[in-house]
Image 1 (tube, rainbow, N blue to C red):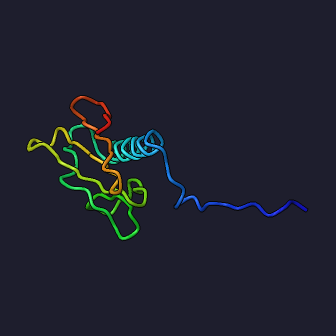
Image 2: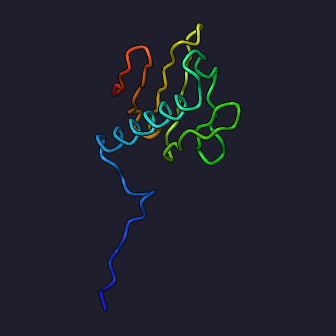
Image 3: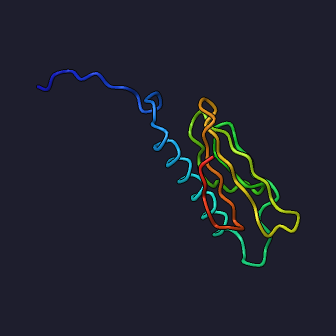
Length: 110
């Protein structure tokens, strides 16, 4: 029988800066991918995104886009025309984050 191994729960294991930013980039990419799949090309981007009690990012109609990691927050800003948006995800403890901008198509580290 194997010996007992000390384990650190996944949710409490500290991520490196690179791992945290990579996770946030994946979340931003998933949010964008799901929004794209839910809208027609000529439709504007959603006017707002919402975060439920389980840290799930959603659009107003209730469609779930992607979960935010525990300890992160997101801001979403859509252009007045509805043609572009910026999604920023920040780690509350460290202040590091990423921003996805539909105008440039880039995800940048903050």
